[in-house]
Image (cartoon, rainbow over all chains, first blue to last red; front, side, top):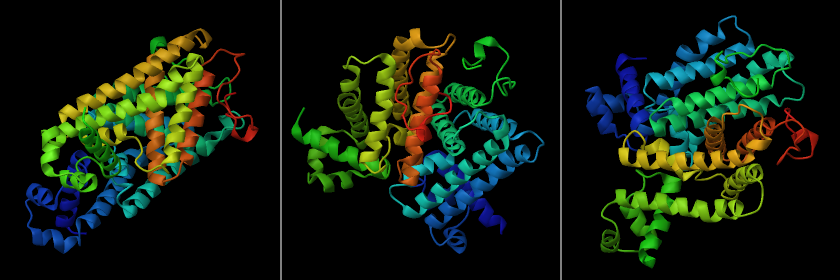
Length: 211
Length: 211
């Protein structure tokens, strides 16, 4: 890995995150990175190849900064899941809800026009669903009988992506915060009676109706 | 309203739905519609103006074909809500999950690069949340105490949008179907005990765990 290559990927990630993939040109990336065209094509055959590198970079960032610290903790499966929801909310809050989720953006922009990106993004989303599934499996002794763990995992990803979308379009964290709170309510309602709710605020006004 | 103007809007809606707004050029629209550049600029000052017309067109389609038949029925508020979820799932299924939700696509593509579109889309999403809120209010005598109706309405929109996203990226209705089923489970769980679940299949394998 070279520093120049990494620099191009970082600059491209930022631009694509805000402007979209099709709307970001190689010229935009060169201009922002201060590099020459020759540098770009030395490292990447095409903008498309860079697009895949941007996705890999984003997965790596997500793993390193969001997932790993939580997954390596000694929290329970259920506790980890709730902490990931909180971390995602904090992340959107930090960026003032600009950009949103790069995976979600690229999924909606590219799924119907580029089969390679669609397949890569499908794989990424399936991987996140799989992670949530494993955490729910770990939590399953505390869950009610008959909970469809795969289906719930899919629903968590949908709720998060939809929440990020609403926060982005409102440029306000509030809609996402509400979605995360509702997801936590739902997850807590899947647990057997008598379990202490996890991740639910103590203030009654912010407490869910399913507790 | 002229037939030519309507034709341009319809062609543009289809193209933008699949390719995205920035990725659809005026030339693409002229080519597909068989009209001349002069025709286009007679009706629209710019592609931007057409973009707003496309959004209005889509709202009108959504109202006429999805919402009105359900809202004008004599079903209960809760029943109407569940039927809207089913109608949205059927809609995605019919198009083989291509295109997805035009509002969601444009929200993610344009919110950070065009303040006018962001505000318009914010208004559209707020309108849908408001509709769901009114249906939940109508259902409120049957709901548990303390349910935050606005928050739940926001969450329904997020769950649907996220479900449509996952169906689009997988090019398969299954993830959306799972999300709709989970949303219905959640909504049914918000009702007082003793209410007959609405919109939940009879087959035990497809029944939710909150029933």
